[in-house]
Image (cartoon, rainbow, N blue to C red; front, side, top):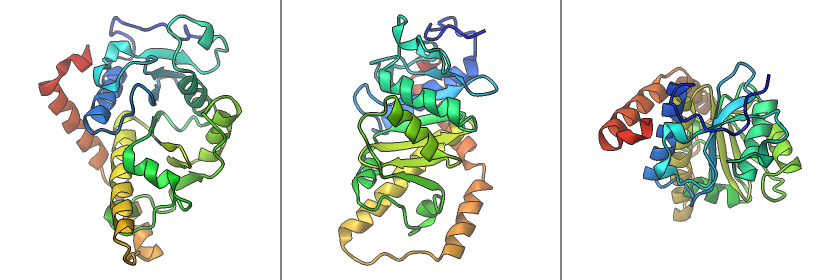
Length: 251
């Protein structure tokens, strides 16, 4: 039986820990100035096939989102946008398509962070491995070169197909999208993607030649990133800091 498509679960009962993690990601995205107005959206799958997921409510600033504010969505419920408290339409289209078509993408974070969006606006939106952080993404990014308007309907489906088995998509002329098995993994990826884009854009601004790592060293470094538990440790610390500074995110 399908879940109620957009009814907020405000008793903090269902999926409480998942809600807390996602709320933390919203708060830190705002604190790090990687948000944009009341746009952008994060989601987290809560059932086995990924089609039921938590999502931010429409038009709520990331800095105010609490665990209980998140809405529960069914990607296979066609009446979602006709319901009270419906999500923002591109959030429904894009995240619904990805959770239907890419079940391995349990957590999906879409943002228009400054440097990653600059990268998405370049004719070449790839990330050459010029340091340890950029090497993390070596051969691990899908680059969308076919922007066709906001991520609605066919555009959302197209993006979900382009993502494939990659965890990161630089959405040309748009922004970025990262995925992970959980919120900690996805948020750490978003953080380092923005740092990598900042390093790369700053290096481009010097006008000097780049010192690019060899494919062998870049791949070795990327695999070392994948073998590290840094993301979980990073997110644990973020939650601990937020517990001290703004514990209401858990409510």
